[in-house]
Image (cartoon, rainbow, N blue to C red; front, side, top):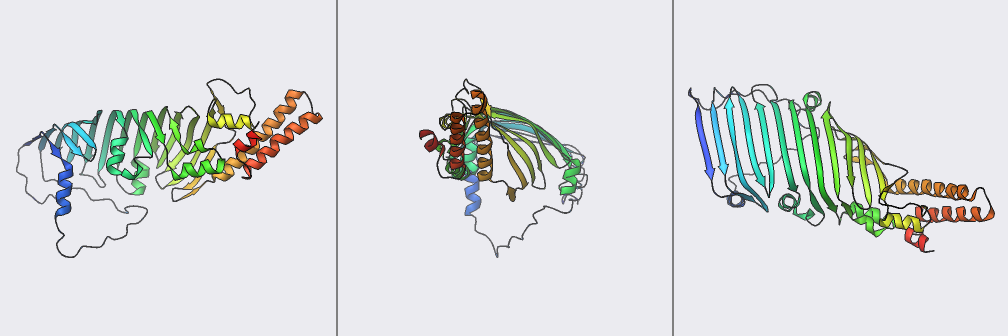
Length: 360
């Protein structure tokens, strides 16, 4: 492809400045413009994305330096103040070097290079973000989730590069490193968490509250490798490990640990599924990870099976612990172990909640 205009020799310099840019007004203006003629129907897109690479683009010798400085940009509940940067175009290569923005108080620094002169385009991007809050972005782009998700990131570092946009090219060329540190996360009113809380019979499971977390994720060969990912809250510690494919494949195991003093730990102790000796501010490692396989469109995971299997393992360990503590198998020990296993069975089959077993 070739640029549709002739570019004269010489460098073009452009400077854009603005004190206030309200993108809401621009969006409303476009909405108010009536459509002319028949509206074309959207053609269905294949699920596996594009099948051919876009051809190289010849910008006809364009040599451009553009600077921009916006003192205040608003969109939805987001406020970017300021937004400034520099864009250069030369030899069909477009560079953003740099872009600096303050997004609701979170500083962003971005560098990007795109070579339009090769098939599929070659790209290289790096971004650093600090003190970022989720709420303004969610309220702007997904307002229905505003009451479900709150939190932010202390830091995020992203480094990525590749060439091409088709799946074979992405698998072969795209690499990415992401490191981030969580600054609190609260999830509530989630249908998934509410369902799990109902199955487990523990109301508190309907809210997930995390205080801190770190993540180191690498993408290469078409796979997102989650190697170091740990998030902690007062009641739980979560550590997913495994791979997620760009083709939507899943092979994840999520290790769980229950915080001492949490409502779940208290309920398990009350039901004699865990010994009373679990004390302190640490965590008790859950006996079984949550395993997710299949694809994003068809996830192979059953919380009911996971919960039942976990309880059976906890119950067996508790019964063996009673025998070990008694120094043998006596009538009282057998009755105590039988009581634990019966209680576990009632919870696992849904006959009773953990609280009802503990109260009994």
